Length: 111
Image 1: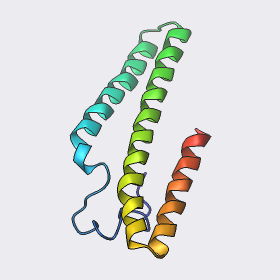
Image 2 (image 1 turned 180 degrees about the horizontal axis):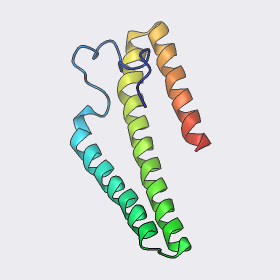
Image 3 (image 1 turned 45 degrees about the vertical axis):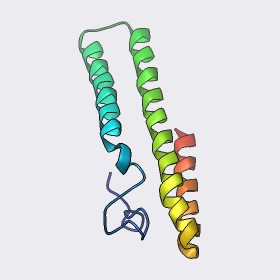
Image 4 (image 1 turned 120 degrees about the horizontal axis):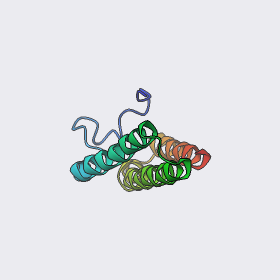
């Protein structure tokens, strides 16, 4: 999935540096995503080895929860960084960031 060009930049104050809300914890986020990737690979292995359906579903649930937890952390960082900076700058950028965050929350709730 590619980023929407209108929302690709976090906020104008940090667009030039490429800094986003998650930047300071990037290594921890990547480590967490690698663990989630390992869980998904474990699912592939389980299916390949004909593991009992309920055991696979249990692992699917754990993987889903891990992704949801990651998404919530990323959303919090977005609110604290990008939305907060837009609020300081004021104007239409703030409205756009709140709208963007609201849409992201709505997508998370649909899953």
